[in-house]
Amino acid sequence: MTSTPFTPATSNPTDSTPAPPTVAPPTVIHSSPAVEIIPEGTVTHLTVVPWYDPFLAQRGYDPRSAYVERFWLGILGPSATWLLRRLTRGLDEHPAGFRINMADTARALGLGQGTSRNSMVVRTVERMCQFGTAQLHAHDRLAVRRHVAPLNARQLQRLPLAVQHAHERWVSAPFDDETRRRAIVLAVGLLERGSDRWAVEQHLQGYGFPDRLAYEAMQHAYEITTQSPAEHPSPPAA
Image 1 (cartoon, helix red, strand yellow):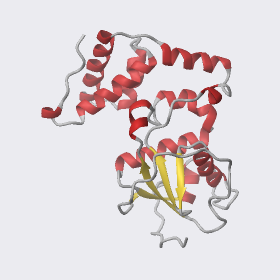
Image 2 (image 1 turned 90 degrees about the vertical axis):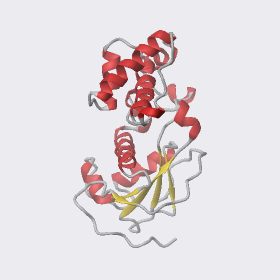
Image 3 (image 1 turned 120 degrees about the vertical axis):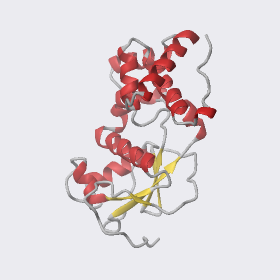
Image 4 (image 1 turned 180 degrees about the horizontal axis):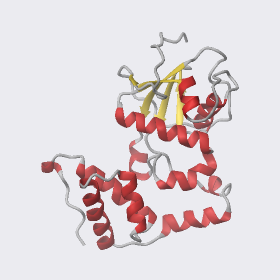
């Protein structure tokens, strides 16, 4: 398929040019081995669009969460993890989508200057697609997951034993309704005082809340503080 005309490159590594409205990409993808998905010399920009899955929005993790940093990093690798996080941030700023300059993005991530078929930035995009965190459409349109799935058993086996044990503690740490309520109330207070939501997750962990609860409380508090006052749900009762 012939690429649409590209806009001139800017100094912004992600170019952040809003994309036109698009049909939502599919919500199911099967991982596949690395293949030649970006032909040599044909793509200098990518249009990034959201790939939203309602199930993963409830059960998965935001790419900027501590879960992804601690557990998905060893599966995706550092370059693909950082690119996924940057593109997720861009989708927060431009929910309908935006365009990135491949060469600028490569330099911003320390992936060199090349954008050829075997360049590091192209291989990084392909790795995201291989592990189901993105999907390429028509060679120049990239649908990016807003949430990633918990690791499956086969993926966990690829990680060091210490990381596997940390993952087990993450998913199995018990907490009661009162602990959850206190975590949400604290998270709401931190957000309302201007803390970044990922800093809130770290603060909650520092206060001794289980890692999974810190993430879930931060997400719930973020939903509360971004709604109008009339729409605010109350934290769960003890």
